[in-house]
Length: 545
Image 1 (cartoon, one colour):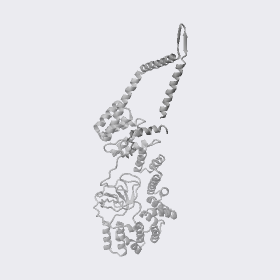
Image 2 (tube, rainbow, N blue to C red; image 1 turned 45 degrees about the vertical axis):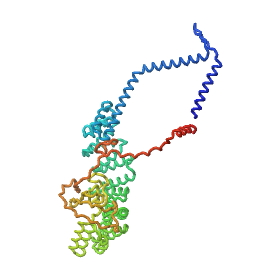
Image 3 (cartoon, one colour; image 1 turned 180 degrees about the horizontal axis):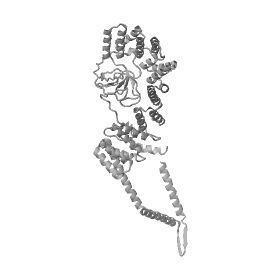
Image 4 (cartoon, rainbow, N blue to C red; image 1 turned 60 degrees about the horizontal axis):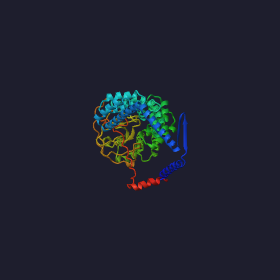
């Protein structure tokens, strides 16, 4: 409505001006050399307007003629660009849908029209991967690396290709090169960190973790946990090299970042006990025990004072167990210390409630108790036979690999902080087999997982009142074990878990990749009124708002 009023006002002003000029025609005389022109004002105005319009039209025609070559080149360039855009877009759609023939055809067309465009290189690499031509894909990624605008994309592609051919050294090289810049992409920073951890490069992993923290790739809680694990790894390494001072320094720093990390607290307690700092060691072990009762903590607490008698160790363990009443780990620690101190009545009193549904450790302790207290070898053999069929105890488990001691990284996948104290078969599906590792016996046993494994906390053992009997299948005979890959370790992968491979290029689905995550469907817009008259009136009312 406002626009209509403005239009009417403009028309009225023009009409009023025309009428005003018509009422006052006036005369205009132009004398120039021998020419004399006499006319009215209206005629002069119309003549000037006509000359102006003709001049503008003439200039437009002349300019169009002069600029026609440039316009023609621009038109051809735009047409070629549209063809290239169509080829690239259709090629990417063909790659995402798995159409090998169309992907290669559109990739060749895009390479002919726009060979140096980044999207053309991306489409070419994807089409090569889709058709299984890894060498061509690698050549395309190398061409991307040679350019500044596609360097990181090329390194990402080469990194994925190295992962697919299980070339860990090349994958780490590409990740390190991509992460060397000031603003490293997330995949490069995390991949470089994982590669350093898998190579046991604790110093390099700590440096990379600090950079990832500054870049915002990890949050503060994760940073503190991972740093504590890496410091614990350095402490264990220094302790193995008889560097007690260095091991104690690293262990105490790890405890500051993660006070409940069992390996760090147990190691710090043992080293502080050796240094005669008993009170400080006790505080560290007690804090970790309250959060995660563990046999290593009980052992470290019992031996805080070197040279202490067995009865003194029993008293210390009993005081520690009282801080977590009813916990099975506390009861087992007291039973172990009681038998070392020849206090068999205490050990039997503690183990009797657990013998209703005994685990393997409970059965073995009962066998030892029967033999030491009464010399009853028959009862001892009976308990040992029950131990072979008893429920498994929690153990350090990572990716189906069971170890009798904690390790910083998983020997299966190289993942940092993968080991958890839990039932080894608690997260296995029916039919899967378990890789069991024994450091002393060098034995491997493959135990079938029960259909309904017992659910146990990954951090703390179950409460005594929560123990329920569970029938377990006997353990199969152990096959021959190949030589260990490294000193102090052995690993037999009967059925190694498949390690997932990241997408080749993070924006496109390829045939052997999971593809991008499905995007959530947007909520439909509010339905508009079908009444066109109401819509028109709403627009009209909107002019006055």
